[in-house]
Length: 195
Image (cartoon, helix red, strand yellow):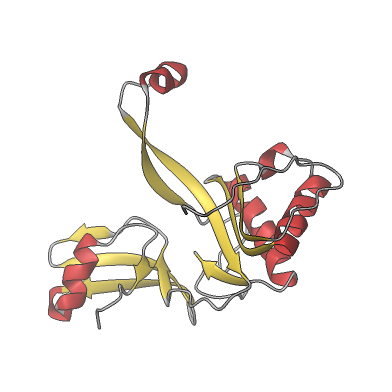
């Protein structure tokens, strides 16, 4: 990143982005009317070798991510994350939504503005990463917080071949079970280096 050059672009009707290795669009799509959203995603897809789009982890944020994902694929990019494939999302519209969670620190001002008392909050988000260069998506992605039970870990997965699935990893799985105990929501599955 020492040699990275950061550029800002104003979102407007005639948005043209200079060619870039990475284009990020974060928490912007909700603020735009639908035609401006598609224009922004198309401009990002045309300019970027890799495009990352992040929206709030709400049902409507997820819908915007799926719309953007479809436009990125139509523009010739391949999905690198979180999806393990370029096929249609296996989540039936209106039944659930794909989102993840990250713990972020809150400043004292942030706590005051939000009326919170904790020094952190769990931010829910939906995202898509698409690339023009070869990328190998994870075989599966953990789509919910893993459930730890005595001698087993229950995983909700989005997989390359089966779509949505559930997996139970038990002690008899050895190294895989040890990895499952430490796995987090949003991580790829199985972790690299495990059987």
